[in-house]
Image (tube, rainbow, N blue to C red; front, side):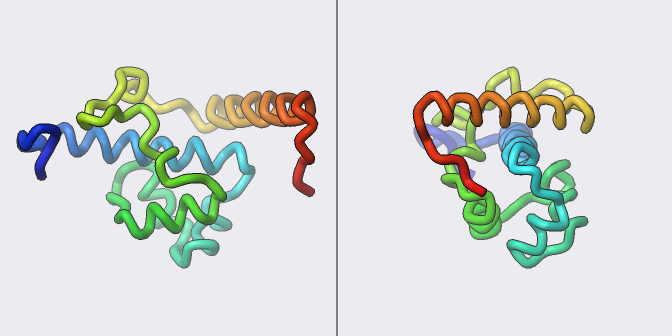
Length: 127
């Protein structure tokens, strides 16, 4: 794999990027209160496949990642948060994953913050 300035990307670097993208998929799905089954149905795969994508057990193709982004209503670039243009993964993305309970709490706080911010801006809320 060619990296920045023609250097070869090490397998460890590629794995770190894949893990960061996997975590970002989950972090984007949870605030939308979408189950793995619902996301899988939206993109034509099983919930087990979504689980494998989110845990990093299976790599996700670019086309499938685009389908996930479309199903979540976000730009595909969101999944690359924490990865700089040279392929380096920010240290914050390399820590142990949060527990499901902690991730849900983060999702609730994030959703509440976003709703509050949208109301302050006068943005209409969906639903």
